[in-house]
Length: 213
Image 1 (cartoon, rainbow, N blue to C red):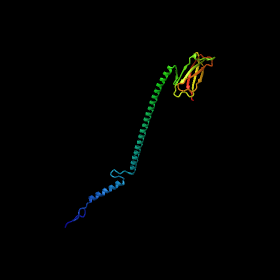
Image 2: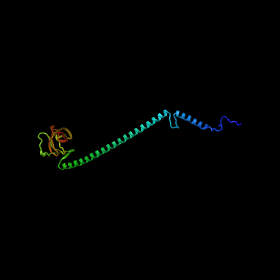
Image 3: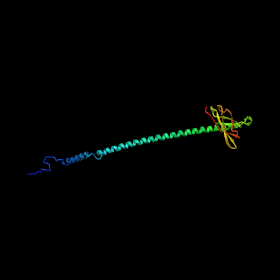
């Protein structure tokens, strides 16, 4: 008579049970449920609060990158505008310097020509020369006659204003003035400067400029 164990061994004709594989499967399933329930999946999943923080950090980084791009672009175009302004100002300055040099050369040429004819430059385009005393008489008061002109291209539509100081012994004791008619470029005007004080011994020009027409 044979006795078969009732536990642990299969009965004759039965296949061994796969208890160990089944148990392992159950353990893995339980572990998986625990991981998923806790919000993890082999280190890839994150708890809800950490996921939100990660999204917020990524959004902040994106916004910071966009802001930096905008600031870099603004700085670039600001520098371009600054450089263009500097170039424009330099070009204008160079043109002004060139024109001034041309005007100076032209003025020097005119001055040489006028001086060769006996004129004295008062300032800029204005010239004068005193008439010889043999050419005029003053009457009861001292006087002086002076020729004035302008070499300005447009002349003086409102005439030339002429003023002079009346001096005695190096000190001013009065003044005298006069206004010419409208003058074209290079036209001569003769002005009488009279000493109404009767105390002067010399008359000298102090002002000569165009009046507006």
